[in-house]
Length: 457
Image 1 (cartoon, rainbow, N blue to C red):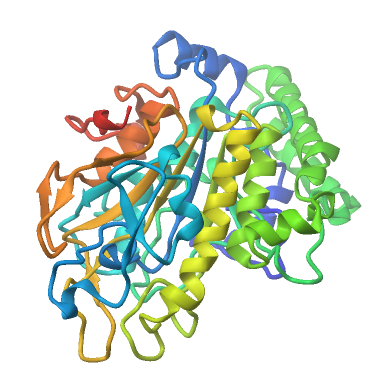
Image 2 (spheres, helix red, strand yellow):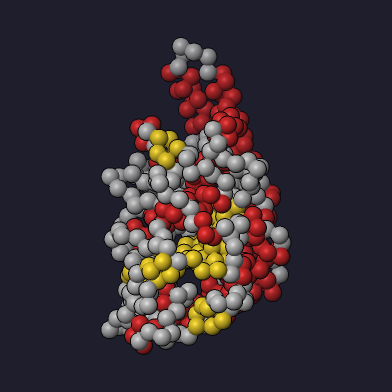
């Protein structure tokens, strides 16, 4: 991933540091050349008439379906839990009392209550499947949906196509990839990562082009690289390639030094009242940044609500340390999501952006129907719920249903692959699109035979 503001070096498995990758010339930070885009358009891979955006809220930890979006008030106490359902502004739709503000915007979102997957009940696999549509196997890492969009559409002007806030997912126990990179597409299509907490008192606009990027050492390294390439391909004229190198570096320089993008990250431009409305926490202010980024041309924003599930209050409510108690849904996590999500929908709607911005909110799995002896709920990928808003989605509806205790889908079972297909459909990407995979073998962007959740539109 390409970081705006990295406090420490991070190494790829091949030994290259992320900053070194950018310093070496940043040849493909722009994502997609115009000839590539035109070729993809000619093949129908992208629909240039449909300029859609997406804000993807990754609710790290796995929210309990029974305590959030799929309440079971008539179930036994050890199933239904401590929270009560409340009515929303959408007829017949009820959600948990921990989301009072969100309840007033149910007409803007749809709830899918029948998600499931059959992979291992660990966070990492859920992250992979919900953000790429696939489980990683045989060493193949599939690309995040936002990275596919970066490859197929590239940037709008000087705005990066895909930004990840505030930091990548860290340790969640499985020591596996989380599905937030470009995978086999190549690191040039990784998201740009803020790598800073916007709720910290010292948060400032990221230095998007540190001085050392243009230091004499870097320029000298780049010149030597050019000389090596020139010497190795004497059999044909490389002047066009050399010009391409210069052009791409110049465009990358323009991107990283963009005054518009620096302004997008400047939260001092927002009133104190607006910040209060979103919530002065990492998630709330990341939602505010996402709105500002989409307004300025960013196509896809991924927000990780939490970085880890250890020794931090999250959705991961096993009930005992180092995890979270069920009470945190009422006291901390619920209000955090409620303010950030409701404010995001409010602002996008009022600014005329919701219709062309899909807002997706999901965890990596659900929680066990029965409360465990520690007073919490454990991992449960057999059934959970998620939210879709904007982007042409018909709000105020429920798609699918779980059984009487929220354990398994009863109606319209829905897979992570179908979620991916739905997002791509909303973004105007053909589901027949093939991506250049490992060893040049084309890989379909969506698995064959997987269709969008058509009931949403």
